[in-house]
Length: 348
Length: 256
Ligand SMILES: Nc1ncnc2c1ncn2[C@@H]1O[C@H](COP(=O)(O)OP(=O)(O)OP(=O)(O)O)[C@@H](O)[C@H]1O
Ligand SMILES: [Mg+2]
Image 1: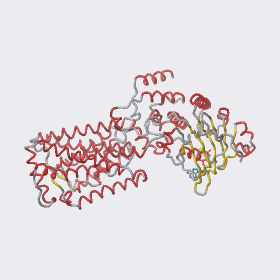
Image 2: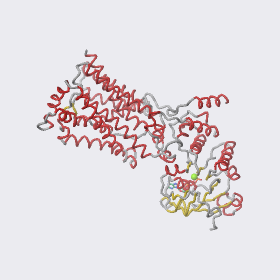
Image 3: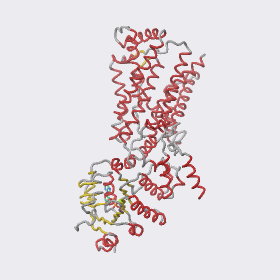
């Protein structure tokens, strides 16, 4: 039983990380845009759930919310989850509505965030984006009516109508199918003329412009797509954890995603799958050590040190990641072109 | 200054008027005017640092002139960004090749074709590029690069990168082709093949090519008109024979 819960939760977390890594792969791995505000777009998804799930559910069931949100949201979350347990449709409505609100909102913010990229050099851009994500966190942390500030916000259990382990299994199926779909979109984009344009801009922006590409538009598209993806991960994460706390969305999370993409292999469409798996494996090993091997210090901090060392080792030893980018990725040869090449090469 | 011969009143294909450009204190171009007719081969020569590349990059839009106007097919393109000039039909190459190192040779060529903003929605259904690929292969064959089609461009030799740069510019079906020393570092047989091909493009497809080149032995016999740049000024222009006989040119460029 314990093993089953462990596997189910591991799969769910992996799905969420794959979504984040896939979005980062497009933006950073392929377009070369260091979207160090990744956590902000992840947060948009989670914050939407934190701000809406209880309120929406209350409105739909006619429950009047009383008292301060920061003090009462957990109480109402439990109360309303009980309503959902006898009304699956209510739960699904809450899930779908938060998703429908979060994704366009995040895409819009993504498009806005793509504009500084037109003027700023890569390092300044990265710094600006970090600042942007911190501002979002600090605002939500201090504006209590929205998400309860440091108290956080309770989130209804939209799968309360299922019993354990079916509930967890359903969550896993939902998360993994969304992750599979999003990864597939990333794969298709990455291996299409769109992905080719992204790599070209990353390699040489001036030459891309000289050969006709509208760099501003391509950046805006990519940020919209990547941010939409990250917000889906945020929605899933909020429902998976069961609460939302602004302080959970620090810059450190952004760097975990950067780590996944770098370790996996920037520019390789499979890098996001491998990178997320590597990180999760490492994280779990660290957790295991913490619980089973007595150490004279807190292993939580130790894990950051290990991750830092891992980044260094990879950048020095294998800068292209575990599975490097290998061109040509964006041409699919059909029979005619294939025979064309074979014919010519045998001539030689 | 003599009245420019090629600036006929009926030529409204491409005109550059009084183009000036300075870098800090250095006046790289000083009121350069010239015109390029349709279906022609125009050559620009001049000593190192005379402003040829600067002028070419002003036409392609990579550099902005301090003063002057550019007119292409009756459109004033002076303030148009490079990507829009490209979509109007002005393709250019870089003197020092700027290939996309992590794309394959074939992908580099394909980058010069297709949508200026490839639609991500369409990517999901799969894009059929087989005609473009055929065309790209033909260009690569012409330039003896086809056997390298799937190699990353970063692995090419200097001369091959130069050829790839040319291949990309040919891929876009340009109306005006701006080539910055396309023959530099290219072996003689291939170099004359390129010149013949440019002549063919001119007569069969009406393409105008404007090239900057030091290899006069290979280029002169194919071109219709020559401009000589010296210290950012046009010091001579005319047919290849006229220009070679001009004493000013002999002094400034040929070193005689
Ligand atoms: N970006 C720049 N900043 C400052 N000066 C520049 C810049 N680009 C060119 N110059 C100067 O402008 C002058 C003209 O340079 P340009 O590259 O146009 O010469 P060129 O005729 O192409 O020479 P070459 O035959 O050697 O390629 C040179 O003196 C050069 O030093
Ligand atoms: Mg030059």
